[in-house]
Image (tube, rainbow, N blue to C red; front, side, top):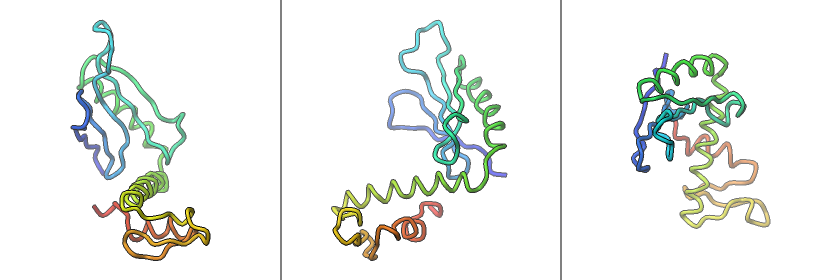
Length: 146
C-alpha cells in the first residue's frame, strides 16, 4: 500500500504541508492564519476534488502539528476507504489538463476552442481537435510518470 507523504509548501510564509497519496494531493496541514492565540493554531483538510464529492472532504483543527497529523490520518482512513482508482485518476486527469492549458497559454498557442474549425497545434507540435484534447493530454503530457 502507498503511504501518505507530506511535502512542505515553500511558497507560503506560514508552515504549510501538502499531503500526498502517491502522486495525488489528498490534503493539507498548516498553521491557521489569523487565529486568536486561545484557539487551536493548526488546521487540516482531508480530501480531493475532482474524484470525490466536495461534501466528503473533511476539516479540523488541533493545538499542534502532531495532533493535526493524527486527526488527518484518522479522517484519511474513512475518506480513502470509499475511493477507487477511477477517483484518483479523475484528479490526475484534471491536474494534467490544467498544467497543459497553462503550458498552451504560456507558449502563446491557441486552443482548438479558439479556432473556427476546432483544430489547433499543441505546443509539442501535435495536431489536436476539440474532441482529441483529453486523450492527447493523457497520452502525451501525463505527469504520472514524473
